[in-house]
Length: 506
Ligand SMILES: Cc1cc2nc3c(=O)[nH]c(=O)nc-3n(C[C@H](O)[C@H](O)[C@H](O)COP(=O)(O)OP(=O)(O)OC[C@H]3O[C@@H](n4cnc5c(N)ncnc54)[C@H](O)[C@@H]3O)c2cc1C
Image (tube, rainbow, N blue to C red; front, side, top):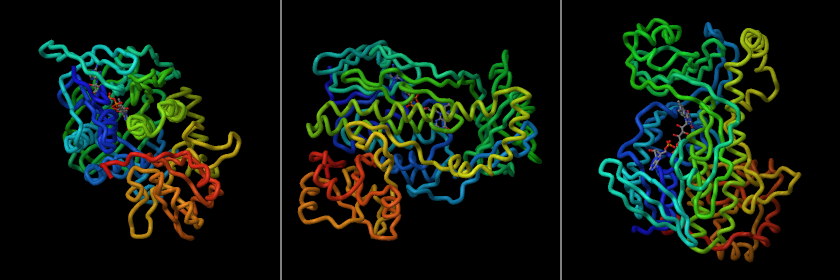
C-alpha cells in the first residue's frame, strides 16, 4: 500500500490546482483520475481576475495569457438580438493585475495545468486509476482504487484525502454527504465552433433573454465561438448534431458569414443545476470543486469556485501537516467557502431566471425594465465588478459581528515599489500591509513569525484601499484574504500567526 500525506481524487482543474499548490508548500501528493486524458467536451469558457490571480500563483499566468481572450462585459438582448441592456467594462486590467474577465477553452487550460504539474516535485499523477472506496481510520484514510482497463485493484493510504472528483463524486457519497438542491434545473445545448471569419459581434457575453429559446453567445478566442441554447421539452443535443440542423439557431448571429464556414468543434447536452453539499469535511476528508457545489454557468463561476476552494484549503492543510497550525483550523474551510459558493449560485440563478422566466409577461418586463437598468445608480459597477463577496467570519477571518471591515476580502494584488506585485513579495506567506510606521519591536515580532512586512506609501493603491477600509494595517493570509484589519499597534500585539511553512522551500 502506497502511503503519502495527501491523496487527491480527480485530476480536473480543482484537483490539479490543489496538487500544484500543495507541491509549492513541499507537501507530497498523489493525484488520481479514472481517465488517462483530459475531459474533452465543452465546459468552462470564462473566469474573473480573482481566479486569474490563482492561476498566476500556480505559475501559469503567462501560459494562460497566451490562450485567453479578454471579455468586454455583458449584454442582454431580446429574441431579435436587439440590445436590452449593456454592462461594459471600462479597462483591461483590474485590481489584481489581470483583465476582469477572460474567455478561454477549458481543455486547453487543463493541458496547461497538467504540464505545469509535471514540473512540480513530490507530485505523482496516476491516470487510469479509479477510486472505488474511501475509508477513514483513526489516523489515516484509505483510498481503494482499480485500473478500469485491467481490473487490477490496490490501495493508497494518506493523512488527508481531497475529493475533487466532480459532480457525481464518489468521495462525497463515501463520507455520507449529500447535495442540497437550490432550485434550478434546465437542459441546455452547448456548442463550441471554429470559424476563421470574424462574426463582427461585440466582444462580450450576450445573454439572449427569450423564454422560448434562451441563449448565450460569446467569442472565446481568435477563431473560436461558444453558443449555449436552452433545449425545449423533447429536444436533445442530437437534434442539432450537425451544421445543417444547428443553422437555424446560430444564423441570427452570423451576419454576412455563411454558416458553411463554421466547424463544430464540440457539442454536448448538459443539465444545469444549482446544488451545494451539506458537509464539505468529514474528519480527514474534504470536498472541493464540483463535488461540493454545482452552479448554472451563466456567470462563469463554477470552475473558479473549485480553484477558490483549493486556494482556501491548501495553505491551511500545509500548515497543519507541518504542525504549525492546529487541525481545528481546517473547519474554517467550509465556514468560509460554503457561504461564498452559495452567494455565487444565487447570482447565477438570478441571471438564469432573468433570461428565461415569465413567458410573455417576462418579455414585457425585460423590454420595459432592462433598458433602464443602466440608470440604476451603482448597478453597472455591480454587474461588471469582478470583486466577489467577503468570506464569512471564522477562526481565520477575524472581524466584529456587526461592523464591515476589510477582513474576509481579498487584498488587491497591487504593484509595490520596485514594480513587483504583492503576491510576488508575499510569495505564499502571511503579509502585514501597513501605511503606519512599525516600531523595531513590531518588526522583530513579524520576522519571528515569518510575516512579510509590506509598507505602503501615501498615494499607493494599497494605501487608498486601507483608507477605504478605515484601517492602517491589514494582516493578509497566504491565500491573499485579509485575516484581520485595523490599527497597526493592535494587530502586532495580537498576531494569531505562528511560524509558517513557505512555498518552494523558501
Ligand atoms: C456547459 C458548461 C459551461 C461552463 N462554463 C463555465 C464557465 O464559463 N466558467 C466556470 O468557471 N465554470 C464553468 N463551468 C463549470 C466547470 O466546467 C466546472 O465547475 C469544473 O470543470 C469543475 O472542475 P472540477 O475539477 O471540480 O471537476 P471535473 O472537472 O468534473 O473533474 C473531476 C475529475 O474527477 C475524475 N473522477 C471522477 N470520479 C472519479 C473516481 N471515482 N476516481 C478517480 N477519478 C474520478 C473525473 O474523471 C474528472 O477528471 C461550466 C460547465 C459546463 C457544463
